[in-house]
Image (tube, helix red, strand yellow):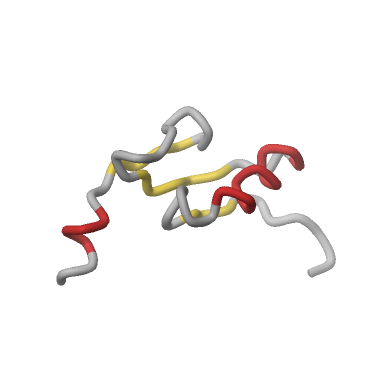
Length: 57
C-alpha cells in the first residue's frame, strides 16, 4: 500500500482491537460492527449487531 486508507471497516471490534487502536492513532476513520461486549465510543461509526445471530444464517 502506498498510502493510508480513507476508511476502515471492522467486522468484529473485540477481535480486531489492535487494528482499531492503530486506526485511532493514525487518524483513520472507522466503521465498526459492535456486539454487546464492545465499546461503541472507540469507532467513529458504530453499528450494533448480535454476532451470535449473524453467523447462523
